[in-house]
Structure formats: C-alpha cells, structure tokens
Length: 73
Image 1 (spheres, helix red, strand yellow):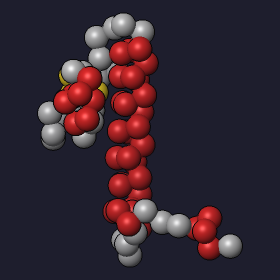
Image 2 (image 1 turned 30 degrees about the horizontal axis):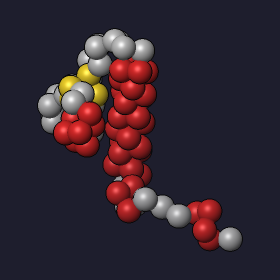
Image 3 (image 1 turned 90 degrees about the vertical axis):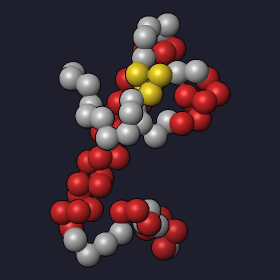
Image 4 (image 1 turned 60 degrees about the horizontal axis):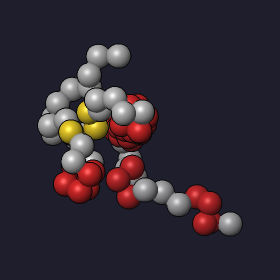
C-alpha cells in the first residue's frame, strides 16, 4: 500500500511553497529536456538544460550553463 506513496527526498519538507517551487523547477527541466531532445533527434541545433552532463560528455551535445535562465519560448 505504501509503495505507491514514495516521495522523492529532494521534494520532502514542511514548507509547502518550497516544495511547489521545486516541483515547478523539475517540470521546467523536463519540458526543456524534451524540447531539446526532439530537436536533437530531428537533426536541428539543440541546447539541453544544465544538468545533462552525460549527454554533453559522451554524446557531444551543447548544454546550458548552470544558473542560466531558460531560453525564450
């Protein structure tokens, strides 16, 4: 029963707003990653979000710098 209620340790805390902000940051990362992956697979220039070190190191893709803001949509 409890297996379906597992929490990510990075999103646990007493401050509801901090948790909501973390969830929004995670979703923004996933959205930027999916968009960059689609561009990459289509052969277009792609800029992956910061935090995708493996792809940068081993697949040679370009990644945003840490602390960089999201590109305009």
